[in-house]
Image 1 (tube, one colour):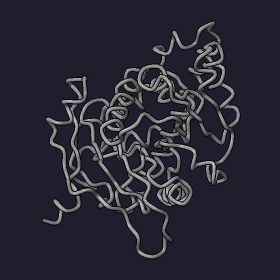
Image 2 (tube, one colour; image 1 turned 90 degrees about the vertical axis):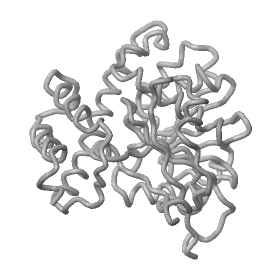
Image 3 (tube, rainbow, N blue to C red; image 1 turned 180 degrees about the vertical axis):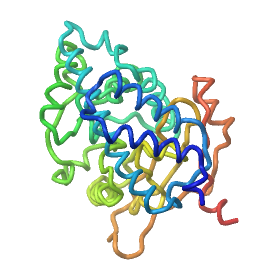
Image 4 (cartoon, rainbow, N blue to C red; image 1 turned 30 degrees about the horizontal axis):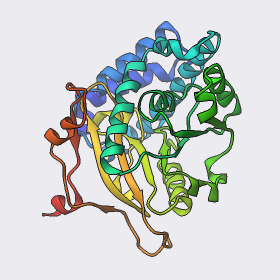
Length: 317
């Protein structure tokens, strides 16, 4: 049985036992060491399908994702406070240990977005932006220099920390807002956005994630783009997985699985005309598939390797 024989699963379980016994998940030598080892264990491409693991490992994975989310939030808060103490916080974003990964992930998402959409978005919503909204910051400063960003987070303290980072920049402070509200309470305002980003850790439980996606499907404007982060293979021990079948009310355009140090997979979908979600209306995957060579052609990071999922038509043929 894969739960008993897979060395990666065994290593993840050993690390989970150590992480779950930590008194605190605040950044420290022990915390940083254990989570770095966990990431390094899960990072190499691995064909494992976490949905087929036994119940015990499923429970460990679920709890581990929550621990990873908590630790990530504390890490971001720690560095957001440090950045907020600088006169020009935006000049020091590279102090965050994983800043280079955000640079690469944001570039990947921008390239995928421009590949699938014809216009530069006027307004973007980022759901679950947190105390250190690096994706919004990188996109706004490097790729979408005229776009307005509304960053939604239920935690007002996180938004307060995030707003201090952009306060000294006259351009970003005008183009970037931080809204302390549960996205489930945002309804018709969602129609104002050309693009909605959904952070990986919004809805760490599958049921919560699907609830948020269904809410977005109900209120986003038809034709608007939804960008989500998912995980593939052993990386699914770190982040929740979003499948095509989870995206009712959306046309799934592409799902990309990076194979380098960028952990998250990227899902892009288009909001379809509103229909009742209980009439068997599911997601659609376009019958075209871009080869890896084509992906590299619009991605200036030559070492960025990724896998694009087969379309539904190809999988069934």
